[in-house]
Image (cartoon, rainbow, N blue to C red):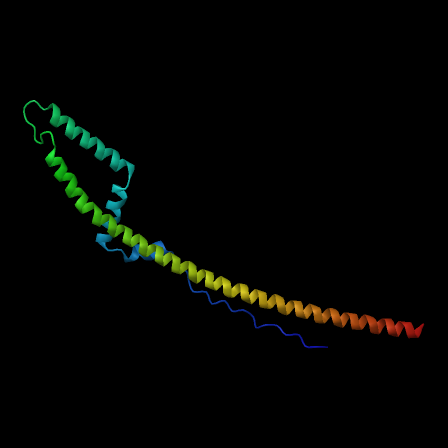
Length: 158
């Protein structure tokens, strides 16, 4: 009988896969935390609604003021305040977006490593299945030979 060959057993070398969010949160500086908070607040509907209400109140109070207009009609002071807000908000939001891009790169790399491990396991499974198929084929051929031998022996004795 032909000897059966099987691949060596697959040894899983699994390194611990960590949550990307935990890794990012551990490495955040205070400035980065603040940038994320500012970006999440300024990117909310609550902020847009509150800011819109404040601007409407500002304009309304300056238009109906009888005695003192702190910012008369073209609302130059309001324009200045909004410009200052935009000047600071844009870089802070960009910092938060850059951190999100870094997180995305880490997640993509993590996905790549998981996929690479899965591919190795799939190749190992395929190799084992091929070896099993060959073993079954060999065993089947041996059974056929034994059946033929038994038939020959029982045919001669009758």
